[in-house]
Image 1 (cartoon, rainbow, N blue to C red):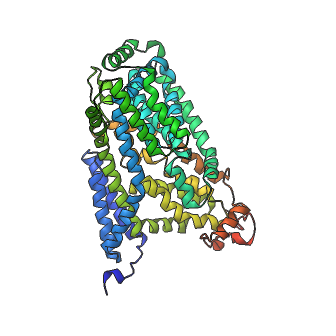
Image 2 (cartoon, helix red, strand yellow; image 1 turned 90 degrees about the vertical axis):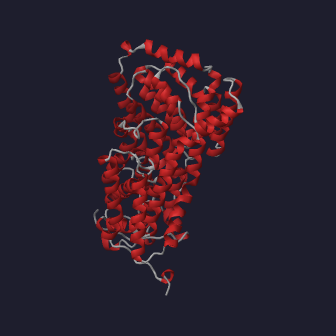
Image 3 (cartoon, helix red, strand yellow; image 1 turned 180 degrees about the vertical axis):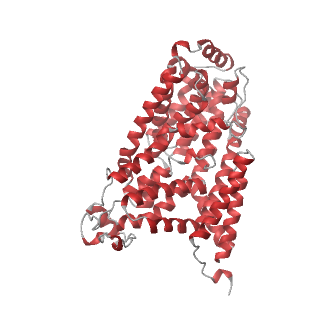
Length: 508
């Protein structure tokens, strides 16, 4: 009998933990003992360890390889966005779009309200574009330059940018993750967005209040060095043509997004508009444009902070992040195909039976999948598939689950440095963590809206607020589409198909 004819065994909980624990150990050695922020090899080693576990369980390599590439294939649209974002960063700097945003931001924005304004601007743009990564790489990059001019610590600016950008991504109907969460839980997209508001809006308002307070606490507007700001704006004006008209490429991209055009063509239209602007306004040649789009822009203004922000972009600048994403996704795909992640989740479900416990576990599982597998898509898709039957068995709307996996998946992604989201933030905003500037990782606790949202979600789960039961229409949909429903009768829950708006018989 060939190995392909053998039915693979399911891993025990202990065995399922082996590749996860060993990978985290290797990752910890690389990051904290060697002080080297390059998680690629530890994650590749994790993939190899998972493959060995899979072989032990009876999987052949072809089966595991299929699981690895299936998950990688799901990420290709986002990898495409990364490639286009790399192009747009290089070309928009060359065209004067990003420098003009920095220039006018320094002229118009007040230092005290800068952080709050940054969060609001990024949230508006992200809702329009449907991509947090596109927002971070364009408007976010410009805001980093403005923050440098105001002497705002880099990590505070990055925290505000991440809070706004990923808030917008979470509630934008154009966002891939916002569409993925309701798709895997079987709910309506716009119902899903509405159900996220009770946790998202309070978190944003709290974050906004903190950023307003921090702006006045960190920056003394009366003593702001306008000489320094003048030196930055003068350097920009001396090296590039600055004009409000140069904001047109950004306006075009936002207009296309408002018109609900697909993100990749919309962003590429921004590349084309930026290229035309760079040629006719800044005097760049076509060959120069190709170079900026591929390798990034280079300039020496004499202001170190501005040079570090403007000397970037291009497809090649994204390859470190793209390679990390592909390896992390491969690791996550191997964990899923060998059943390791499912075994860990099943163990959690065997210990948690109340709605509040399951809701908390769903958020924690999405966060843990982000932490271990390094992929926001897997952190949404896998818990969404695994927990959906449990919610239905409890008679709870799976809108609760779709919100939970967005909170633990989308919003926690940028806060994990080796995750796809975190790696992109660090690269696009020039935080220099790879070069040893580990203090800039302080943006993680300062991205208040990202981590406060799941905290509020857990609070609501335990208080019963904004935690809907399944409606009659939703239960009918489960039956019509033959959706899987877990038997939760031993824990005191009624069969949802025997009544309407079922509630647990036993107290939770």
